Image 1 (cartoon, rainbow, N blue to C red):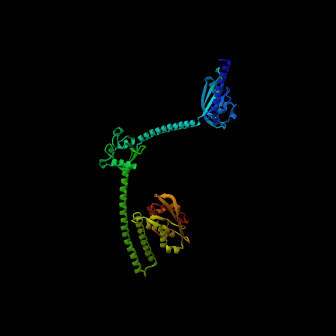
Image 2 (image 1 turned 180 degrees about the horizontal axis):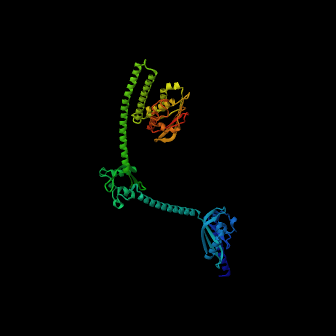
Image 3 (image 1 turned 135 degrees about the horizontal axis):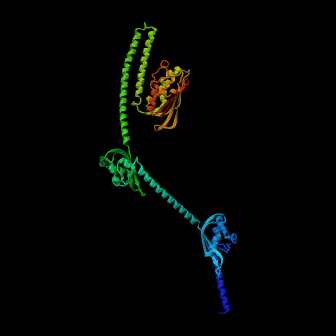
Length: 524
């Protein structure tokens, strides 16, 4: 081969290599998914591709000629990480790293970088290539997955601990028998409460049917499995009745059976919670018997009061009759002193008859056959005011009545209630113009499971010392002499009994010479 031919071949080879390098560089410059840059031995950027612009935000003319450490966080720069990676690549031929990198606008991304050393024919390092991938999305996904995994691990651990605590709690509960049954009613577990209530040890009863706790008659009637069927269909079944202990003794049990379901809503078993209510049952029976006896006694007392009142009135009628006969037979011979004696005798007899009537009325409150019905208190008050029409005119009394509610009540008792209160307000009043105010407000509070209202009866009469605000409702309690103000001393006791029979409360407030106020709180 001539020197000319050798020179030509060398030229063609170099030209081919040059063109290949140019094609390679153009290809690298067009890549957008990777930042591919060339660094000199000092780390100064020599070229820049589209991927670098896309990932890092710089245009080529802004960044070529600057040190590649601008892509690293301040902490990494202070730690010398960029120089460390170049040193590792120069020594080992290659260095890799993942971490936060900084874009032109100051924001960060998670970058995976590979730095590769470039060598000349004598194996001297003449520069580096640096390839960067933006793995922010992958990093976020990995972080989210890690966080979710940690969350699940924590939750599983908390659930495991909760289950352990729950099982320990159930096992140690002593006031309730808490059992787990399979679908056929076979006992799966046993707690301290079950042992205390039913008498069995766990090894004596686990694996056996829960029908062991039912009376033979209930088992024959199929009660245990009827309860399981109800719980399966309704989700829950409850029952009270006599149950059997291990020793054959009985206790009164309150039982709640709840169905357990799998993820597909199939019944897989039951929980059964039993309470021993034997003492409550006995107490209820005693209370029922006591109430029955009390009802009988009340009936006897009412019958006695009726008979007694009839028998007591008969001699009083005779006293009045003979008093009238005495007066009319000897009226021409009766002097003032004798006239006073006869008048006092007649007044005492009438007072005694009034007292007997009031006692009979007092004893009957709460035992009357009258039914509760919707009662308009405005109508009741108007009827009562008509009863006192003559007294109101005589005393020139001024009576103000606000809007009153319609409530469920016994009308005749409410009439008697307001008749006593208004009658007292008129009687115990020495003012030139007696004033009586009756008003009502609806309350937010509940009374006997219903809405409630407060009714106030207020007067400007003689009043009473507030120290008597409770005792004023006692039977036969009188704060004033019989000679000053008549009456049996039973009126306010009747009022209290009527209000309480309507599940309400009555209170009194007063001041001597400054009037009295009666406050009734009642369901409405």
